[in-house]
Image (cartoon, rainbow, N blue to C red):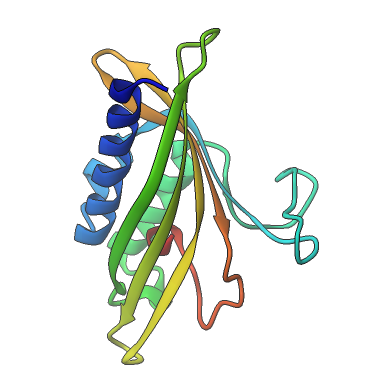
Length: 166
């Protein structure tokens, strides 16, 4: 693992978290490749998450950035009434470790995360946490997210979850 690879991956993950916390949806979406997969598997058992989003239950699954764009559009237009107003969030990213795939040139990054949420409608706060797996692909001069897998460790969810909570 070279320091520059790790720094590039960490910088992108930190930027993604900042955009989510600011609810800067345009910049957040711009971090994703058009064919990016966004997946939050469910748990089969206490130790095993689901393996296949096409055959098993997922907490969230979008097969491309288009699904994320549609979700953002629902937030913007108020068609997602359970998220009006959207919760305030503070994401913390840590333990970022990245390696370059010599065959594809893509970066594989793993990290841990927490997301602190405050729901102004209900006046409640929660903390979600888990592991991220990112696959990053170079597009022109920038790294973009080609795949994001989110393993939610505290999957007893006190309310709803959405992409910006994770």
